[in-house]
Image 1 (cartoon, rainbow, N blue to C red):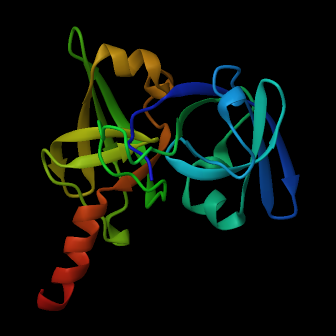
Image 2 (image 1 turned 90 degrees about the vertical axis):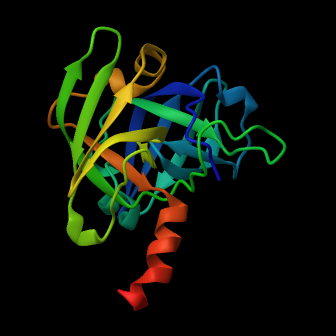
Length: 197
């Protein structure tokens, strides 16, 4: 379980194919000394397990299903990743409850500067049954955000300077593919209501 509050950034330095899996090595001198083998880390919102460690980098493995359902299959060496360790139950929940299980990807449709903030608009495939609500929570590339505008298959979020500078939002362009995790409470409500609709 995560909060969607990005802890730090990492740099992807190596991709190794192993049958249908991929091993990703991430350079992160700030975080690596605090890690252990078998620990769960959120990478752009995807929960992956640490399988090996060096002094300043660590490696995780993604299976075929993860590569297909997320943007991990499109990762390239030198990409910058949002990283977050699993939450402590004794800590404050500053974001919202994030599982690290990406529901689907979205495409960045527009980026509008608002003289001190940015409005990012994303489009996504509605046939997968997910949706957003205005003022509800959404996780984009592992970042907990509030939806400011919700339409069918599209939503917008407002990004403050701190988030822009300390996450990989500053690398997004129109056409960038991002990972989405929809609010878990909303997903349970939807499941409960389906028989009545």
